[in-house]
Amino acid sequence: MSFLAWIVLGLIAGFIGSKIVNKRGEGVFLDIILGIVGAIVGGWIFSMLGAAPVTGLNLYSLFVAVIGSILFLVVYHAVAHRT
Picture 1 (cartoon, rainbow, N blue to C red):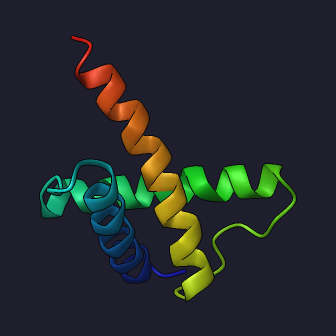
Picture 2 (cartoon, rainbow, N blue to C red; picture 1 turned 90 degrees about the vertical axis):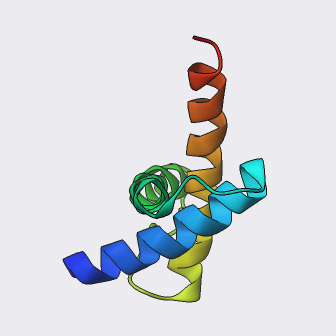
């Protein structure tokens, strides 16, 4: 995937994930970062479970990235609110 495709996928996945987790979003830049990290985390988790990881800019990859960003956001908020 190209760098621009990762940014677009990250923005969409991070936005959806942050809206699901905390209903308000984290801001554009942090949504992109969280979405890209979520795509990596989701791809890793899905590949460990035997499913395909992020494959490109498509609905399946968006689903994987959103699941990963939700998991990452839950951990992020648990650690951030603890301090």
